[in-house]
View 1 (cartoon, each protein chain N blue to C red):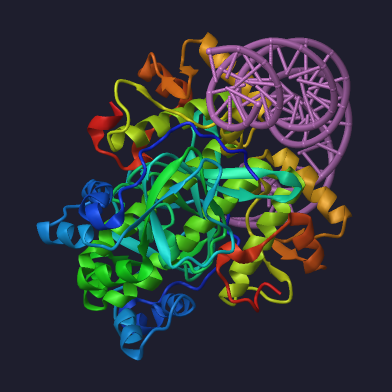
View 2 (cartoon, rainbow over the protein chains, first blue to last red):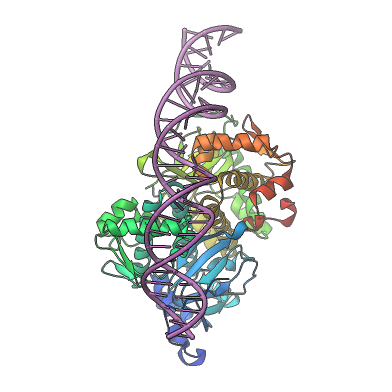
Length: 262
Length: 262
DNA sequence: CGGATTCTTGAAGATTTTCAATGGGGGTGG
DNA sequence: CCACCCCCATTGAAAATCTTCAAGAATCCG
């Protein structure tokens, strides 16, 4: 459906047998940022069975109608959550990066009502539902961070409703850039107000409810105003405060450490 | 901020001491629709402490910035979830009805990033976080229905992103009506393709990302096409199949019983 | 190096907004 | 019980934002 784009070239995943213990580290880091984890919890998580796999840009990890029996933990690359609508229209409702388990909801939502697609080449590792359920049964307090993770995603959806529903194009794009910079900074994938931004203008259009033509013109305006630089799939933000102001961005909904949003 | 609208006049709530056991029945019914509940679970839920209260139309149950120590279970009336944006703009991201615990996420999200406001007069009963946490600790498998409930809400947010982002006004409104009819039918508040629809055209505008003027004109067109009747805060759907078609409505995301969507 | 995808720009057109003014309805108070 | 008043609904006309269509340039990838 989508053309292939091979922007990142992650090393081929290690065979599972040799490095399982290291694979799930991004998950531990993510959960740590959501609650306190005991050493015993961390061990249990790291011992989850995990089956790494490479997806090429444009491929779907999970598709609408699927009834998954596993969740994908993203280790490298970008994933987008999207719906296909009538007349060939598409709406993206989220972007996910390393450390995210974008289809965690499938644990309690049997049938997928949308797709998860690879924006770039993606390395992900699958964890059987069964193993996750067993983990939660043995460590019931782990419900908190997992549940909370899905709640933060829900808070982001709400913000996107407001973004798409009520902000004009310029502000809408600015807001998306603020969010995606912070989301990456929170897990160490961005700093110094520069970060990867690998999606095409068509992807940006489908995430903001605009057309790629209008995204193009809006990006031109934002560059003219020295609000952003964007080339070679890298975003640079010369003046964070000014971008935040232009976006009317309030990071509360991301539930981050206060330090990050400074 | 919002004008008061007193459309429904629910009976004054019973004093807590006399009827606590009955109060929480809507919650049990809701959870039953999400998983199997044992008799023991149901008892435990019904014994949760609950403090009923009446909100007048236009009042907020919870406001942005709050750090709730309790959740509100709606017993009667309509609640909307909304954000206030710059320039006096507003975006509604959800509507909730009897049986919903709209602020359940506050259990794991300390600070509110949006408001919950009463669309009509609302009867709700508050349940302390502490009591809910204790319940979940003693009955760990109750995590499933509660978590699942917040996941269905998240699925609805995603659909709203698509609705607001990619559908034209006519289809967008039609889609909202389909969703709200089914949402009410699922808990016995609607049948025979007619249901309450108590929000103003301004509310509908803020839910769909349009202006009230355009909502007005779009409603006129929908009435002209005999797609809906809407007066005295009641919606009538003369031909459900035709409305579904006009909306390109696919109920999968609501995770309902198959029967209901027929 | 070649083909395909993505980016860019112009011009015309559609949808939706804004501004403004009138009419209607229900709740409150006299 | 009636009248008033405020909100809400309705409609017209003009304007803005964004889309569509189309074509050429740049970039990426194999």
